[in-house]
Image 1: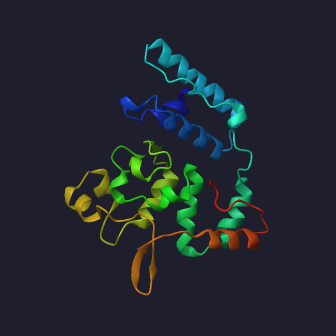
Image 2: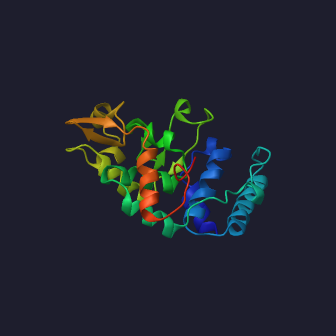
Length: 212
């Protein structure tokens, strides 16, 4: 248990360790790994006990409750079938949405300045999140692979990890997930029709997006 908690919470800034969105991110990460909710609840209860022993102020209702768990999540096998039917330029976009559990609007609005490669965190600004509240998600090996694939030619992931100022300036304000339309690279917009078509072709009844 401690290993899973350390890998996730060890990357979170101390000031944000009790942010409810951070805890929700851990729950989503473990759900994506196929872990039962009861196990996740026990893991977070252990984390809560440690915070109390350290006399760290804890917000009320920080632990997710069983009756708040979404029951309409797609199974891994269902998502894999849908993924295979998606257009190539949307596969990484929906994969990132699936891994994080974030809404498509938040993934679409991610710019490179929201990617803290050095800290290993996705850190969107409050203005692009649904509730205008900060939340984070660790850059797992799968997410790093996705993000590397989005980098412009000539830019290497190691430069972001090193905090290269020239590269950060070059990427500032540029969207992470893009596609090329008539020779122009654009930010991915609303693509629910492509998702619905992929669901239909995969023979899966699903929501408008993986998470809505």
